[in-house]
Length: 617
Image (cartoon, rainbow, N blue to C red; front, side, top):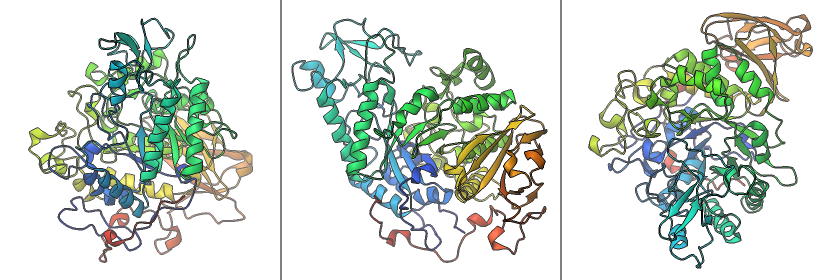
């Protein structure tokens, strides 16, 4: 059992169970069963009281992240930037914004995280830079100089007319006129983010130097932001072009040769049949992981539609992926809940269900956090997590969603879901000691999600809180390898509200059942006939369920927004589990005790004294 993390390490050292300084695992496919956690540096912890979170603030909360059950932290851009797009407008690829700390701070972060068995991946934004980047400033002022051809320039704005405009709320063209160079430059996102020219071999060299720089620092992975848009070609939509895949394969070869064990994660907001190409081929592998964008909105659609059809349809349309590849799945993140990958009718329905106020909308999506999006329904939040943790892919959690943090729709753009982490009911939610007016964004103070009620300290003290529930289900998932990289098979049911599927590997078979309706439902599930007569056991409490019936028929009743994870075992290898659950005196089959999982231990371990191991190859 682990001890509750101390959320204010400045006052006392956290008490950890001996052996917690576990170091990194040697598994080269660690990402296939990992749980990822997205942290915005400026939002997580302010160590120097300037109102902005920083690297040392994140270091001070690593014990909390470890206790929660996280295997890898994803950190969005922390580079010098004018900050007009949350840091995704990069002004220097190989430096750290002074507000966040120093390169030595970042090295310590990597070292301390690795000592706890936590990996670090970072964003690398190579499609575009900020207009403030020295490359662009040189390109616009000296067209014949070394950076003159680093960006896509034209004398008029008529080129690549088949490319869609992504940020339809703010942009009217993919071209912007530069008064200095007196030409137009190409941008797929905001006009202050000019696209790099990947037709120029020198751009390749510069980007690969950036890749090597951060891998030498010790990061465990790179998330390739906006990767489908690297190249332009007339007569196409300028997305997913073969040249883009060739360049990603070039990055992958460098990682495999020079930095084995370091992964690539593709952010490609495309249909699955297009995204699967970003995994590459056996001859030319590309990304280890790709985000599966279309699954996410369909989870939310299904919850309001009260039918599993939307989820089933997109999973059936998802192609098989290569050996060694893994989907990345998520419920929410720092961006809007994108609705680009749904039909016009589905989009209209979701706006009506989830974004009745126009301030809740941004671009083609909804800018809400998980808890307010679901009306703060504990049952729906739990069901959404259960789906995220059992469907194919490695889950990415967003900071604060584990406590049900709210948002602030009165803030501009996407800032409403990027507010400070709520640690305590004290000033600034324990995030910072600064004057409240100095915070980069105000803490959430709405009626339903006020930081004085919704915070880590409060939920740590409540065994039945959402935080303890998330901690517990992550612990359960970590004990069942099939839920990470096992095979996936959809099952037929006679009730549209009930989603049923199998996860299996060479060690276990798990039957996953979920009721998307807000009322109780019964269903007859068609399990493969080879499992007829097999015992079913609840993985959470060890209680026995009825055996799989003759011919694979299985009848189940689920409460509103309810779910089961049932482990199936052959009669010849196991005896039925007791209907009342596992016996308390049987340590091997003891049901999960969420209170015990976080009960303090009287013998603390000083993690700081542990010698961080070298990064695994």
